[in-house]
Structure formats: C-alpha cells, structure tokens
Image (cartoon, rainbow, N blue to C red; front, side, top):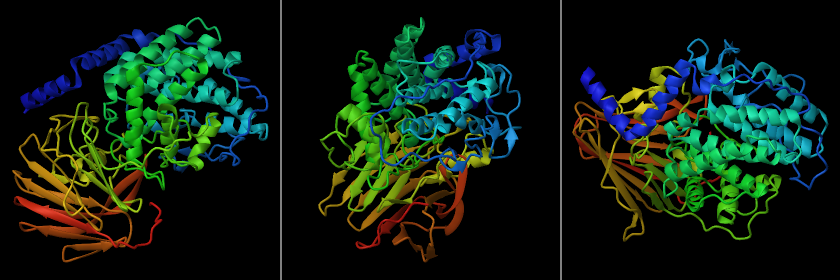
Length: 622
C-alpha cells in the first residue's frame, strides 16, 4: 500500500513537472532556513494623506457606485462603516480572530484549525474597497470618502506592518492590493503625482511579491499571472516616479506575465485551472496590465500574449449568459473578483466587455450597464459588435458548449495538461432560458471538513457518475489528485439530419471503471446517454438541480417548467430525490435537490430533459 502511494506521488510529480517540484522544494527550504523571501528586512511604511483631493475630472456614469456595506466574497456584509475601520483579523464566519498577527509571515501555518479559513482575513485585505472609495471621491462626493480611504489605509498599515502577520503571507494577495491601489490612483489622477506614503507602500508590496515568484511559477495557476501583472504595473509606476528599483520590478513582471500567459493559457483560451471564476480573475489581470501599459507608453507585450488574451476572452464569452451575466459554477471558485467598478459578483459581463474592447477592439454585448467599467476607465465602447457565440469544443482544455434555442449545454471532459482541481469529468451544466437547471455544486471552502471538501470538489458534487463510492481520481493532498484521467473518443459537435446537435466523450479511470456520455440537443429535448461498465459494486448518476418544487414519480421528475425522464438498458436499483449542498459564493452553502440514480450492473442510462417551447422566461437564479 505504501509503495502504491509512493508510486502515485512520483507519477503525479512528473506530470506536475520536475522543474515546478524543484521550485516548490527550494521555496520551502528557504522558508525553513530563513533565507530568500523569509529574509526580507522589515520596512517602516506610514500612512497619512496617501491620496490627495483630485482635480475635477471628466464625467462618469450617472449612478454612483454603491456605498457601504462591503461584502465578503460578494455576499456576506461587513460590519465596517465610514466611522469604523474593519477588523482586519476577524473571521466573520465563526467570530474568531487570527492570532500571532505580529509574527513573521513565513512562520504562520497555511491552515490553522483553531481559526478557520484564512481567506476570511484576506478578503478585505485585497483592498477591493479602495477602488469603490476612489469612485466616490472622483465623483466629488462628500469629503468623508477620501478621509475614510486614507484613514483605513493608515489603520491597515499600522496593524499589518511589512512583512508580519497573515496578510503578507501570500504573494498573490499582496499583488491584488497593488493592482487595486494602482487603479484607485488612476481614478484619482494621482499616478504621476504620488504622495510619499503611496510610493513607500507600493515599493514594500513589490519587494514581497518579487521575493517569491519562483513559488508562484511552481503553482502553474493564477499566482503567476497576478504577480506578474502586479510587478509590471507597480514597477512601471515606480519608474515614472523615479524610484530606483522600478525598472527591475517592471522587467521582472513583464517576463513573468508573458511567460505565464504563454504557458498557462492554452491556444483555445482555456486557463490552466479549468475554472470559470479563476479564468475571470486571470483575464482581468491581463486587461489591467494591458491598459496600464498603454497609459505608461510602454512597449507592447509579445504576439503570443495578445493571441492568448484574445482566445481567453472568447472562452469566457462562450460561458457567460448575455442576458444575466451569470456563468457555470464549474471548477474551483475562491470568491475572487478584481477591479470591482460595477456591482454583481456573479455578473461576468463587465470583465468580458473590457477584455473584448482591449484585445479585440470590439463590443461583446453592445450598450448596457456593463459599459460602466469602460467609462470609469476612460474607454469608449467599440463600434463593432462581436457575433453571437455558437457551439464549440475547446479541445485543449476539455470543454464543450452546445447551443440551441433557449438551451445551452456546457460539458467537461478530461484533458489535463495541468493539475485538475475538481473531479468533474463528463460533468454537464444545462441552462434553460438563462437559468442553470442542471448545475455544478461549486467549491464552498478550501478549509473545511474533509467530508465536506470531498463533496464539493469530488465527483459527488457534479453531474456525472460516481463509481464504487470513490472519486474519479485518488486524492493525494488537499489540492492535488493523482492518476489524472485521459479522455477517450472525444467527438466534435456535429449536426444530425434532424437538425439536432450531438457530442460525446469517454474515460476509463485508474481502476478500470469506464464512463461514456453522449449528448443530443434538439429544439425541445436534451438526451444524455451514460454507458457505465467495469466497476465493482455500484455506479451512481447524480443530477444537481435548481431549487424549486420538483416531483418524482415512476422515474419521471418534473419541476421548473421541465421534465426529466429516465430509461435504462438494465435495472435501476434505486432512483431517489435527495437534498444536498451547493455553493454559488465562497463560504456559503445552500440546500438544493439532487436526483440520484443507482446501478449495480453495467448499463446505459438515458436522461431525457424536455421543456415547453413557450414557457415563461426571466426566472432569476437562486
């Protein structure tokens, strides 16, 4: 057994890349020995009047941005007010405070069971609120907004001195602060005329980021793109204010972001994390880096940077509802949302519209509130409109999108060039009139009980098959699976003689169990055929459903103006409607109904979803 685990770890290390494994080991050795990033000398950074009152500027959107309350992860209200600074070390999920706030960042644990999820502390310290405050200041609102902005920054610095406490622990968290700080300064026209406290604040952050970029590269995820963008933005900013280290930071940031984009954004636009929300975060960082580059008059990025940025824009546009801005909850979702110039955590249109304008010089959606972000950034909506997205297979990253009438299908298939975050092979999202009737359960939390984490990230939380009460891949650690799946028989989307669309794919897992899924989408039905074999005791098919009044009778489920009917080539040992959890927002779980279908012998199960051709539309998502 021990030998099998060692072999599994060796195989997975090879897939991760020995260079990445080496970078990670070197990083951990430095932290343990107190060298490298752990040896950063403390800096004295003071607050005060970080931002001065801006000169009157050009007109901005008519409606002012929302005031307080601030929200954790887009949903949980903070108790902070204009007269009271946030509690920077509070976990509002359980009321506990982070201890050891004065300890060097590298001596703090990654996960502290006595405190809970550290991301609750990090959330307000990403400084998303700085951009919102700057919007109020720029509109000429009550002077209390600028006073509060400076006071909160000063309070944060006094309680989070470089490089001590949890808010200096992560290079990416530090990077998000730099990007928000830079764009707040841009809104306030103080990029070229910074205060001394602002310059010192940026330099302290850049030193922390630059010290551990080898760790960011080892992750092959958004750490590298975020940290590269922050070093480039902050470095070029410091160059323009004559700081000696500015060019060094800027050059390092340019190299890092171009390297990461070329490696992590696949030719079809899929990002290495196979995640809709992390894709948005990555795309926003590219947009912020590109717009800043133009402002600063810096040379263009590489050709491959722009090719991949364009492809990444199209990938996200294919996932997003043009009517609501919502998107499938597929892949890891930590609640991240950068450049919050508009409201709506689950509205992805502002990010797509900005990237479309910058990288395609086209408008993704035409006129609408998603253009507020463009206006705040001094950009015009491009005159040319992009064509409506159609059906497409993203073969590099393992996604298929089928569209017909009121229905959109998003399916996953295993094409793992990078480590998978969820065991979601052959998962299907079904969106009917812009509501995801068959949905993904999300992520919930990176720091919860093993059983709960297994539910959300494992195949139990997805619309797929679970064999023998185990996952599709064995779990090695909190964020790492072994025995990565390989797809078999992935077909292109084809139009059949009756006008319906058909797509299929399959896989065989590390213990020999096999699952093949065929999807046929017509004007009034979607037929999903699942053929399962070579399992030991049982296979369970799950359909995670939108909340609502569902009724199950004789293998027919009805609700939400839809009908799901089950047929099988063999006996269905159990069909039942149960309750489970789903998480649209990080740190929040809601109850949803789940249809479970159990088989104890090889079979083909056909789920036919049908809908009326004239049903009420405009149902809001829950």
